[in-house]
Length: 272
Image 1 (spheres, helix red, strand yellow):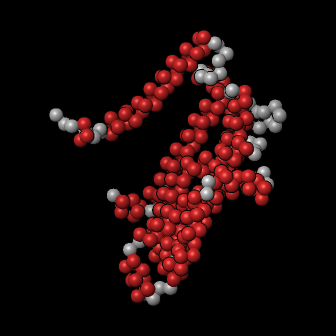
Image 2 (cartoon, one colour):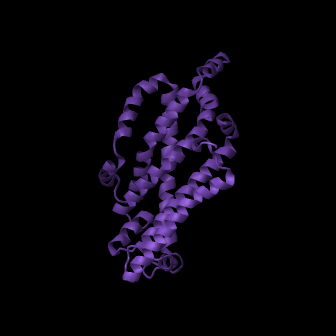
Image 3 (cartoon, helix red, strand yellow):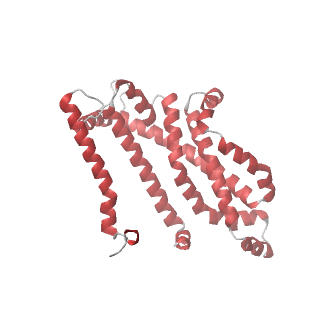
């Protein structure tokens, strides 16, 4: 008899096992919702799926009486623009700082301690400072995301750069390459797939900072809407919004992974 530790499910069984916990959670939720609504039809803690569907239909397909906008899609667009802007800024700065500190000993000696200290500062603690310095507009939310994940990306790129075999640098110098040429032609192509991996790992934190910033100072966005309706105990809106954020996060991670495979297939081959 095969020991459990040695059992590896095939593809079909793996998919079924992956789906099973979600099915069980849905069943448990439906049972709990029906039980609570049977006792109190006005209960808001565990709304039925029909109630959540009605609420989301109103927000996604019925224009707001106040602004005339489709609230759900406007919230999604606003949040995605903020998240994408913050992540792109963080990726650019993180790549530059990580590459330089990983490749140049002088840069590492001068900036690595500062980078380490900055990475230890809780980004949410800087939120009041950002509001004072850059105001309550869009820039503060984008800056918070960038400040929150840039140190992580920079340190990851720094470590990945330092892992590149020194023999490559010696060969490049033997062939007459300058420092700039080594950075651009030798190191940069090898750390680009690592950059995408670092961005994928930092997206969770990026969503956290986005939701926090929108909850404190915003007039639209997914985080803003969740914290706006919580005062009315509108779980029929909060739960679908949380599920939508989760779906978007999964979709972005999946697309970045596919982009990495498409743009840098050699990196995937090296891993395998």
